[in-house]
Amino acid sequence: MAKTQAQAINPIRLLLKALVLFIVINILWAAFEPQPGYYSIYSHLVRGRPRFPFGEVPQLAYNFTLDNLHAMFESHEIDILPNPNQYTVLVLGDSSVWGTLLLPEDTLSGQLNSLGLIEAESNLPIRFYNLGYPTLSLTKDLMILDEALDEYEPDMVIWLVTLESMLWEHQLRSPIVQANPHKIEHLINRYNISFSKAANQVEPLNFWQRTLIGRRREIADIIRLQLYGILWDATGIDQYYPEEYTVAARELDNDKAYYEYRVGMLTDDNLATELLVAGKNMDRQIPFLIVNEPILISQGENSDVRYNFYYPRWVYDQYRVIMSQQGDANDWDYFDAWDLVPQEEFTNSAIHLTPDGTNLLAEHLADCFVERGIWITID
Image (cartoon, rainbow, N blue to C red; front, side):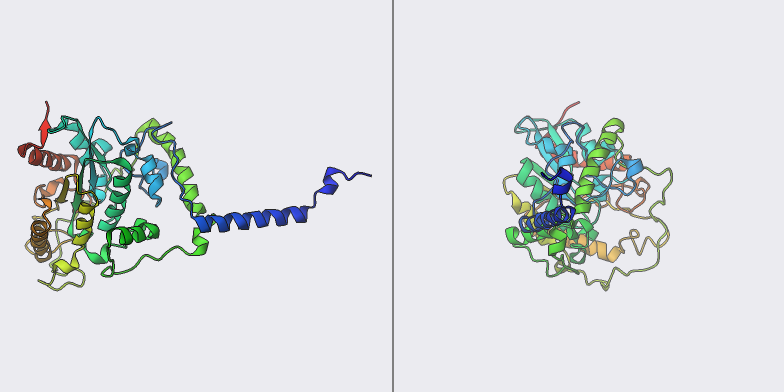
């Protein structure tokens, strides 16, 4: 008598087969390390974002932080490149470039785009892309730049920096750096960079972290980002804007301390200038501008001791001298905008600008190149 289908299926054997298949898939995933994040609905079914996804209140911002660089780029409007009919400029930096508390059109890239600039030699319209990302680390910027240069064929790079992002001890502390050890290994091998001066190191992923189940959160976040893309496209909202926030301090402590540095003891060995050199040398064919970004210069109590919450005057003054010397030694195109913006044009941090403060920086950058005959303005 023929066995029925129910009699033919052995649930224990079926469970064992499924378990073996699951183990094999995870072993293969860990062995070959396929990188998720290469496919996206952005720039196809919905608009690409004008800045990288970042945020902690996704229900209000339709945006959240993830660590997969591929997914970040795939969600960005830059993913439509290369475009031979425009002059493409990448703008790198920290949260001030990304645009904390700023609408996309009020960020540095947005305001530069509103100026209607043309590149003089090619007569092409200039398009600026916001590749800023919160956290203070040149290494994080270098990871982003390396990815962008390989994929999008830019014509120019503008990189905004500050002392906090330049310190060696801060280079590997950024969460996105810690989450991408293979990118750090790539930078070390490709550009001969040593992170021996960094305060901590990036540990390679262990076997479990490389498996499919070990990366389940990353994959779930990529899927979730696609869903929030629908809400972003419908509303244009990509950041939570609180009605009130704590403004950056103007009344300061009478304290000359800056981490473990003693007064007068900051040197070029403390700054990761070789990362700027590496970035400039990634593509020697394109212009590369390094900008020392504006900081809040307090006029309140103890402003004779400290410029702001971040910086005592002595250390920031030394930093500026070192950067000027390094610029001359490495032939940088260097623009020091540190005192460009008055204190009332800063918001919740000594580096976060208001729309008017950002506009001031954008116009000065544009004027710098227009006066040199490199860019042309149109009315």
